[in-house]
Length: 441
Image (cartoon, one colour):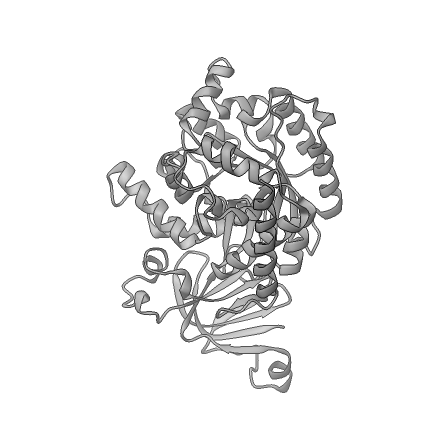
């Protein structure tokens, strides 16, 4: 339903606050933004407007761009809290990989729906999602009315010929079936899981295939020091970034997740090839992988977005938590409290995240842009007083301050309710799937 939000404060495209604004939303777009004092081109009291539009008093709210999660694994919500207090390699090989070996389409479907609900509650409308069982994931996203850039992760530790990998056939299949569907809400990407889970022939062949299909790339990069240094030992001193660059991986738009241990030459490679880094501060802290030097990346000309990683390594999808943690880590890493601003953090979580998904017409409150939006309660105790509302958004707001989330102008979360998701069914299905998997381990 078309919507008019009256007398609302907005976060402008310049990351500034403008008060007393009327915002007109129709179909999937922000049609008009104007001062509440004008209303010159829209008679809000006409029968046509009253009948066709939901009119909402926004005087107690702030309208801002929704969040775009630049790195996640949605079905891993099934593993929330499963495998704690472990290093990354032990966590993967003794807990996560055995659990994933028992996954089914039904389990992935419900795990994805659970993550969609959590995302909407936390103001996330779209995720760079890397996993498998893509048919089940797409079905869940379509049903929820969310957005996704989903990729079938390619791993090949055994060195099987590329054209014989079932994962490659699945990738081709899902690109042909789903890429650009649901009015562009569903996009399919290419994905190399990581340097250490494949071989050079796989990396080169996947680079060529992704370029041929005209899609973008998603890859784990230098997440841990062990990964980074062992790559150099395996490849005559080449870092993961150099190795992947030589394999042609960065010829298409690429998101490199983590990038904790990148070196100066790596940053130059990432910058010159317009690779977007998805920093995942909470996950990297939990697994003690290290601290991504966001300031060094920015100074080197690299665009940075923010991801949550999976809830198995996080354990939630809170972008407020990620923004604040990223800022604090960057400040303490450089021992400089002035080195990064809340405005920069907001751009990373909104506009930069949208650009990382090649969704260039969203991520801002701007006329003509997609209506991917959050309504934030601005009169919560933790949001007062207001010396600088942008500071409050990043450093004071919590997820309970989100009142509404819109995807393409459609309400997917409002005040604890999920209009597009049957939460009772999702919770029952999730627990049924988890119990089934645990019984088979």
